[in-house]
Length: 194
Image 1 (cartoon, rainbow, N blue to C red):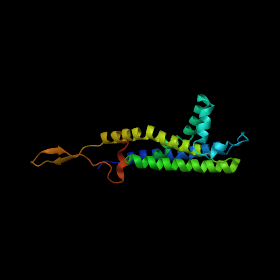
Image 2: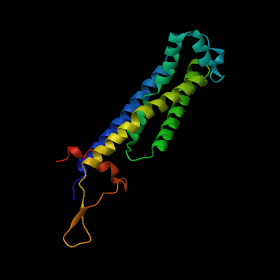
Image 3: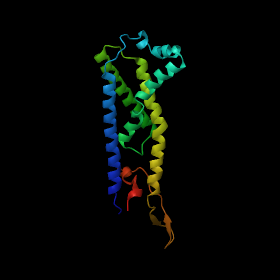
């Protein structure tokens, strides 16, 4: 029996780092959303879906890229940090995406409503859509590749047990079932074990 202590510790450290980074980023977002705004007016297109996006596109390409890019990038780090805080390597990709996008949408809604209460501005539906899309795009761009890398790395470090074949004295290699039980994270970082 091999010791899985270092794999568990590494998984715990990565999960704890993810939770700390999510909390720090959410604190930064709250500070950013609740600071005083110097704009004394609110665009009338805030309630109409895609109205603000249309008016931003009418301003020109640079202003539209700045405004829409800011909306996409505001919550995009949550698309990577939330799965890191969850700590699951062996999970269904669609389920992970749905969890992350739903959480990102709820964070955007809470920040938008608190911003609305603090500054008196109306919640921008387009801001909610852009923030949620940014979370989804960041998740799709980074998380599947990182999980595939971690799965390959964990499988490479596992020894293959030998079983007896049909004939006496012959041994054959048997594959290890992957993803069974709670110990999937135990050997994720097995390269660091001695």
